[in-house]
Amino acid sequence: MDPSARFSTGNVFAAPAAPISGEFFEELLHCRNVRIERIVSSDRPDPTIYDQVQDEWVCLLQGEAELSLSGQRFALCAGDHLFIPAHTPHRVLRTSGHPPCIWLAVHIDPGRQALEGK
Image 1 (cartoon, rainbow, N blue to C red):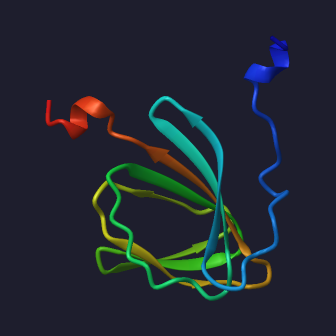
Image 2 (cartoon, rainbow, N blue to C red):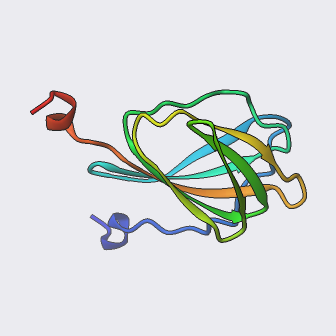
């Protein structure tokens, strides 16, 4: 096996163009109970309300955005980060178009024991 095959490299800013609407999700790494995604947002966010079983930490790398978490609004600009506990209803209210929003999202799955209530 090639020793470099166990390493994952890339550039978070080498993202595809922003979609016309909604968001583009790309998994960069999945290791045990942690999943890291790059998200590129259009300037027309989906009205989807997310309620996830995993904790999520997001960092806005580029652009500006406004999120709603359990009815509370958070305005974010490049460099801002936010922790979203599992089962916290949240949605993207607004995103900038120029430059498009690029996010780094870290999802922390609770693990099988937590899901089974043990």
